[in-house]
Length: 303
DNA sequence: TACTAGTGCTCGATCAAGTC
DNA sequence: GACTTGATCGAGCACTAGTA
Image (spheres, rainbow, N blue to C red):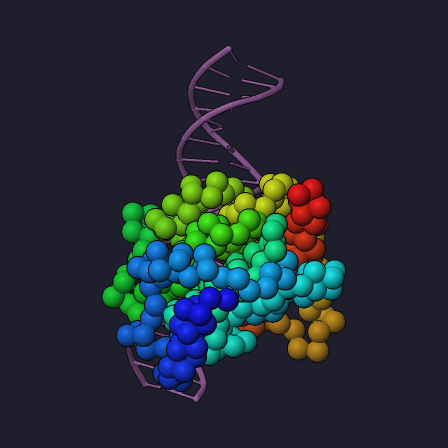
């Protein structure tokens, strides 16, 4: 590793963190947030000087459950997780230290490695439209809201990381978001997709073992990722509903993801709100990890 | 601290109308 | 009658701010 890179990383580690009690996922004050897009050339130069080890086959970014990294490791391929929930001090992509840590992990990737990213979508999906106020002509949403700014910067830094890493490493990646997310409509994501010739597919995670149907968009460069496309029919829906009932019956405490009910006095209008187990639905099922691994290993062996 | 109200996008299914 | 196209509807959904 270059001396400059080492010094910068060390300085970032020494700087005090200003943790906020109300939101673990933002370990820094907004004044200390780091916008990587404003430092591209500087970062590019640092990356060019990297001379450390290259020993990772998979990087599981934002994957708190770690199902991807675990799957790769189980199959004998070194993998690592990056998630603020696991390491609030070093894995905060909103901060310079967190960004540099991710950069270092990216530089450790071997040729043809896999990067899977599932950025937080709470401030991107339709369910929280009343808060983020995103729409087709303004996917950046209400930037007077701190959480919206936070979400936007996180996604922008992710896109910047992928763009810069593609200059120095040959790798494949997949970014996952629920289908109603505005993430892939953001300008920087469209630019990234065009730059790296990404494909976009639609699928349903229920086909890979998820409790809920969970319609999902995948954007990325992994060869043959189109084979992950699934179509949900009425019969499939019934099959997965029955499967969920069987699973719930076996659980000591059945999971409660959300409540859906009709509004008083209105015949059709439905109201939906999440429950405490909603966060579980963010975990990737092992079948999904296996499906991606299968595509990856085929491509990797054909290198 | 606990509770409640409110937000709307996406995809698949279905049906009607139009075209060959 | 078979097929295509477009409109409409239903189902599903990694929440948060405001208020008592």
